[in-house]
Length: 295
Image 1 (cartoon, rainbow, N blue to C red):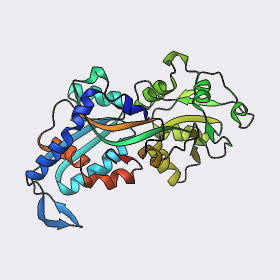
Image 2 (image 1 turned 60 degrees about the vertical axis):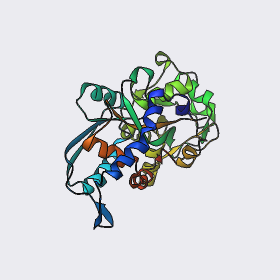
Image 3 (image 1 turned 180 degrees about the vertical axis):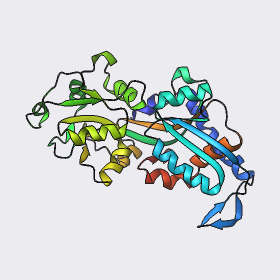
Image 4 (image 1 turned 120 degrees about the horizontal axis):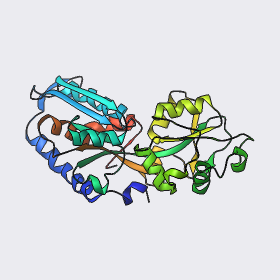
């Protein structure tokens, strides 16, 4: 059973039920001009204008930027700003009011029930190594032992005779929290050589060091491999880290990618959330190598 399905909070579940209501309200409001078309898309009348500021998950940022560009083609007087900093920043900024919508790459926690989460996609968290590393698969036990310093040489897991360079992710990031929870590693027990702040830094660490290992987004790995990065994801307990296995629930470490707000969105914010939840966003989500949440 995927990790996030056992940890979604009741508030997130309640928020999910609002999807149909929000979408129906948007359609019923007539905010799309059914007759105006440009490049094959419906063009919205100039009903909305202003700025939407989103902060948080670095994994979600490319997806939200892509959704934002499409949304701006429909609402030409809208400006969308996206800043990263991790899911914890998204939660903090929403509460403080310094952003309109937070990007959070995990379920909301019990202590975050004051917020409303809208899951728009699903993603997995996988381990990557250099493509020349002969290791193809690790067990959950092996991963835990590598990251706690009990396994220090690749030959102990079927690889070359070389020291393992384990790279962690910063505390407070969604991937770090999911990784720690899934492998049952206490934060004080990690024995690592360094920390990669975001997915780009993780890829760079592995590209520059053939003996490095780091964990990151399944969707981001798909994109980087497609761009020619010399990396590969490892099978986890024999299961390939693919979007298909995230979709069918077979890959064990997965999470929702969520838009988070302080209150039920209205006006421009509601229009953007509705768009991100609509069939118009499905193609974009898949192009970013994520799985639409309701797939």
